[in-house]
Length: 219
Image (cartoon, rainbow, N blue to C red; front, side, top):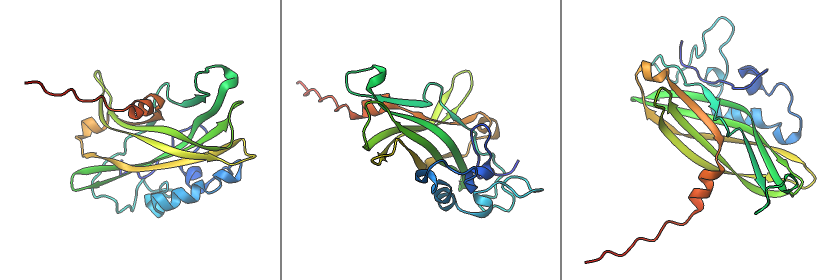
């Protein structure tokens, strides 16, 4: 199989629908999602499914190597983010809930390096204790070699600002990462690679903690 330049994770959807914006989004906040991804992921064979009768990636100039782009999956237990009012875990204290919608990825190989661009679309919904304004959504992307002992090859946390306008109960958000780059693995290892996405509030909390002060040296 040739270079896979774009893929979609989710039921009842296709790569064509993802990049063309079909079916129509439910509100204006997400109407520009397809256009944004078209511009961020390129055009033609680099950002769309192959034309009928052509293998995926046919005509792409991204790479001369025959390499499959790892699949994308949502990390178990990290598909939904719920943010409550501080010190209250009751249902009516829910401020925001975030969920994932669509994902896409694109791989390129240059000078022995596999670079992976990842895109995510999700939705932020106001809860009973929520209010319009900006909140930060913690997104974690990771490249993992699965097996008896899974190994994380690459991982990064992104804090995505999402603004809910007044009078709007929910809003779509998008994020694209172009940071993932690793040495090209062997074909056997590449078959075991999986790109995971997920919400990571614990990772965000750990990054906010101040570093422990160093103890002065004695002697």
